[in-house]
Length: 435
Image (cartoon, rainbow, N blue to C red; front, top):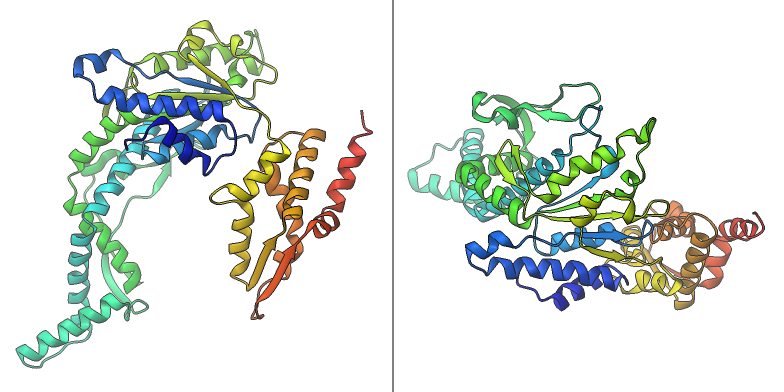
């Protein structure tokens, strides 16, 4: 998608409030990818992404900025926690796993796109397959013309969903189940590993026409898609468009200890270094180079500092941005001006149970004020505090809603907020006097 940095920031503003410095940094990084793609092959080889490190407390939008950025341009994206990796020689995750996960994400992304492209043909083929099954169930011995009309009516009824709840017995593909080869380890799908080496298995199942149609469409789409082309495109996307978000990088920073849980901190950094610098990782879809992937690292850095990372790793993250704690004004904006704000989410959820929920401006102001003060007097969890506050606030309404009641209008004002959040505000006031 050809977007200017300003357009990218405008898109991010629909979902994330504030943090302009971080948005600007990721917008420039994304635009530079487009600029690089327009250059000759020789020049493209020389230009690598300028990786970004984000500093800021939890809940201020670090992950959301990266996730929305990837979604904006349909780029393969994964989020990993630096703390789950350990130095070679210790029990734990191998750092190369993050690249394999990214390639897996790219494969699914491309596969979904190709499936959407052939969906019309796949649906037509699936309908013909289902039509043959229904004809067997509803045999018709009339003349040829009458039978054609019968088939057309049957197909029309199938498309309208008339037979959706009809249970039929049919052959469906029996995909291998995920297995845990190591107790406590990740589940592995043997079918995805061995591919064509395992013979296709099918079994008889009694399922509804609606469920069978989904399976038939998926099977027909598989026949129309060239798997080799999907793998090739997935590797290209992962290499050139992939974004890896490494969270909690501050937890592996700090001076090396000689014993205890921190023994492999610097080792993990040294293991991550070649991935970020650029190396080739073997995946089940083929070798993939990490040279042109964009890495975004993030951490609160309350105790450790960016300078505590090993110099080589610091050098691979030339762009450093600091995200600021959220203020009352930010909370008001989050509750009112984001595309899928919490107030709208609760309004549509309760509308299912005939509750017409509205919030007055002074109620929004009170919610924002309480959220900010709780963050200041206890742990600062950023925008996630709003989830806690809103759940407490709407607990009674959510519990009593439901059933065949007529439409009820509920307006939340400041008085309602203060009354229903009295316990939270009382605890908050007490904390002011606790050292």
